[in-house]
Length: 453
Ligand SMILES: *Cc1c(COP(=O)(O)O)cnc(C)c1O
View 1 (tube, helix red, strand yellow):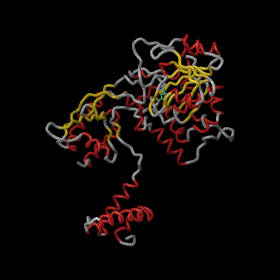
View 2 (view 1 turned 90 degrees about the vertical axis):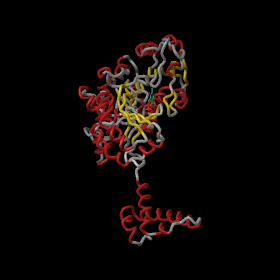
View 3 (view 1 turned 90 degrees about the horizontal axis):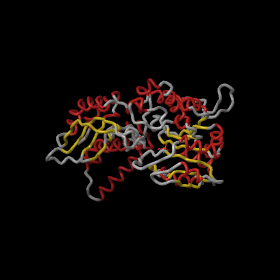
């Protein structure tokens, strides 16, 4: 078979190893159907076998990690990789892969450098902090802070802030993992400064304030502000660490988005360390950023766990240009993809929905009814969970009297060259167009003809 004419082009494209393995697998299948008496003799034609092999080889060579269209309405979708990066970051990452870089090499002195310096100055400029360090994600940042500053000692946290982020990140678990003893104070809905003050003792290592990213406690509530906790910490010589979660670098109210506490507010209010994610509202690559007091950052940096949690050059290459965008906030809503998508006016999505509706209707056929409809997007990744952004898109329902299943349609859309991911709810498949930017629309349009019914 391998020497036959039909397989030569497959051998040239996929190599002998892959073709031989696929051929053996296919011959086993054919042998099984022959023994079962179900083999059709045309399946043994060389050309027919080559066709089957080609399909198998192409499928096996297809990357598992692929671009998709995020029409879920959740801009920072953790399962879809959170923030989409600006082109400047994409270029920087590509450059850092093509050539050696001065990752830990000080070009001024010619001596060994520290990889944090790639972004430390920018982080300090943007947050007002003295020093900064970078780890793999915010979960790692919290683990590092607790392990280095609070192992075998106590950390005081409000009962209203003992969060579970999802994906097994729970504050009490991470404390245990770090070897720190969690001291809960206050109640679920109300915690006062005196609760913290009364709990401070000889074994207290840290006061910790955690941003309640993905839930809201409302009604009869009280929590203690960073400034008050910092003041208490100073008078009792206990450091204050703030886990900000999303940690915006700018006040989003400037773009009429819901307000999220900024990193510089926490720094200014006196927090000793502030940790936050780089791929949530910040709009960068996955990383955990820690800013704060220089002596504490130096301690974190010296610990072996920092070595284990450090980021690679690709992350730093992407992070630097993203942070640099914040130096010119005037252009941020245009250049930072996350903010651009979050601030897209509903009217833009509505125009797009009206334009795209007939095309989608034609492609999926009359078993379904497609309408353009108002809907609400979410920021996602735990940021401002109760806030919704007015948006527009397509709503797909089974047509009256027809039996087009939405599950089946969703599966077909996931099978497209660039899978389209929507959101199913209320017997409707919602395609929120907020994240379908103009530059992507041609690709979106082109592939609908391939939707196989
Ligand atoms: C998201 C979040 C984390 C985890 O951050 P990752 O970057 O996803 O690891 C930790 N704490 C809070 C408050 C968060 O919102």
